[in-house]
Image (tube, rainbow, N blue to C red):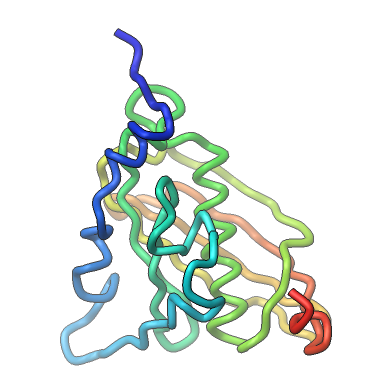
Length: 176
């Protein structure tokens, strides 16, 4: 039986709030608070597939700063499948790219665009199982930021990738 994943069906599959993000910060250690990053940093109503909290079919990610890294959790639903029971590889990479972008913003306070990426999909990301995503900067200059991202599921590394972001100067960022 084919799975109907039209836009209305996909929107209906999504919870009104990602229950994963209603929980404490990902990987939280008792007594070690993490700083939540502002999900409205780009303004209310912005249409980002990865982080907009009201996007009808998006990831609705929320991010946390933990010392030298940015973290989020995500549980992919059936609307994000490629092969049965497995998250689509392009969407896995989209998730990692969003983590990288928020790593740039959360750790440097600057905004940029993905200029280059290298992705290693090491294990299938399973549907309906929580993913812990972590981004760390590996190089920061006045023009670029390089970020390493890992995705883990059930304590197994499913993805690792390296992203290079081209930074915007203040004048260019204000034009957006």
